[in-house]
Image 1 (tube, helix red, strand yellow):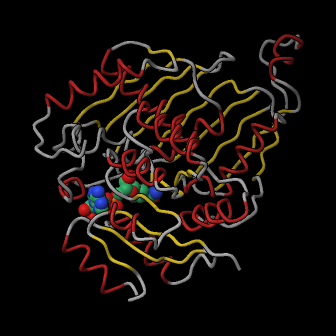
Image 2 (spheres, helix red, strand yellow):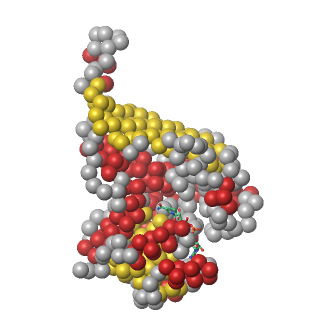
Length: 375
Ligand SMILES: NC(=O)c1ccc[n+]([C@@H]2O[C@H](COP(=O)([O-])OP(=O)(O)OC[C@H]3O[C@@H](n4cnc5c(N)ncnc54)[C@H](O)[C@@H]3O)[C@@H](O)[C@H]2O)c1
């Protein structure tokens, strides 16, 4: 069997979790050969749970130059992702990057350009794309069997976090260290799924409330209104402050409605197109019949290890990734648009003006009270 030698950069929550699973042989095609962590205590701790065969490095650049890795997984704070990825591409290493790809799209565009020039594989860790429920929604909607989308509502408020979570790392929930709050940390998955399933909106008007439920300077409560090219509209609501939270993705189309909630996908199927019925019916209060059913889904929800498996297969055999680096631009463009709309207090068109976004982000960083700078 062909194998891929992977090194991990950043041995915090996510990097250490990936490392432990890979060291156990969870993905047979992948051998964990090295890790790097610039916090001495965390690096020392990782020696206690990883085998001696792994190389341990304080510097990611030394790890990348060691000859031990064919590819790296980047699991550091967000601002570092582009710089580390570009360094890896320059050394001919393949990269699987934790979400989000970066904090602003200009950075991520540079990552994609460098990956293309280097001829290596650039994948994104959008692990919720392995969820069979979302895969089924994507296939049904993009396949067109339910007609055009009319409305999208996603209430995704089950990202509850306590103050202790925000206090657990000095980079967290700061403009300088993290580049945003719930939109940039928890929601990249949902925003990626939204654009993957429904396509990119063309206009966004958002309201981001900063430090509404926690003692933080970034947003922890967001309501965004979206408009799509075909005239359909959407609302995206998220927070880390609701308890209990909700995760309900509801998409209304010409031939019915799909609802994903409580790990179930429900189809409300109309006997005919609503658009046609609306104009053909002679009865002002009539409705077509609706058949309600649970949609069967197939496959495991392999999450992070599934994304790493597909990344390895892509490098070794040229197969398709679950999400490539370009997807990192699209999801970030949408989250940047939500931020920008709220900061400017107006509706923004997509693609947004990347320079304006960067200028506004820099103003937030300058006004920040946080001492940390990962930028
Ligand atoms: N896909 C998911 O489900 C998921 C879940 C949680 C976090 N994440 C993402 O993973 C990334 C890390 O988040 P986390 O929660 O693990 O953060 P964390 O703070 O727990 O870990 C980050 C680690 O990176 C280290 N680090 C920083 N710069 C470094 C560098 N240049 N070289 C080597 N090490 C460096 C830090 O010392 C720290 O140990 C973020 O992008 C986050 O959004 C993804």
